[in-house]
Amino acid sequence: MNDAAGKLVIRLTVGVLMLFHGVGKLLDPGKLDFIGSKLAGAGLPEIITWGAYVGEIIAPVMIIIGVLTRLGAGLIVINMLFAVGLVHMGDIFALTDFGGWRLELQGFYLFGALAIMLLGSGRYAVKPD
Image 1 (spheres, rainbow, N blue to C red):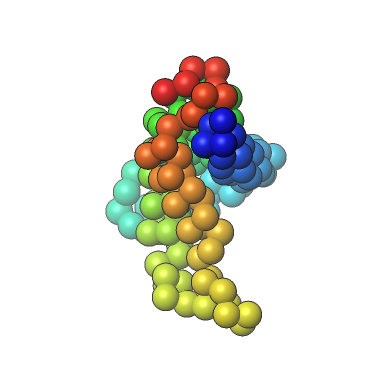
Image 2: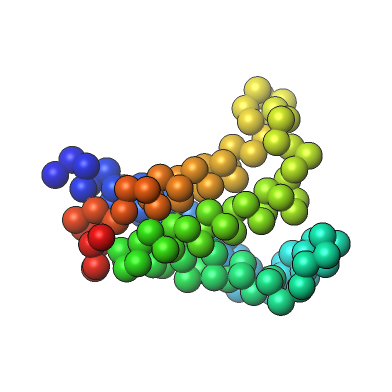
């Protein structure tokens, strides 16, 4: 009971909070231009920009409802690796003015999704794995 409830809590936390980022991009599609410019600057095709919607809308919904949960979590891990690699590399070893890690939010999404990928959905899912 407790581990199933714990898996549900982490799924809902990571999924719902990441979904807010995706909805933000839906409401302001101009944010994709920034992502596209970062990808182009790294020599990657701008079509990959649409992966932000996959990693921030589709994958979180998969995790929230518990369908192909490990795959959804893996997509978020990939999304976050791109985000850190393209935008936040200069902050990997940086601290905030309050002593926290500058990438704590990105780290939360990356490692939270990694934990979900390793743990699976748990019992409280549409399609438990």
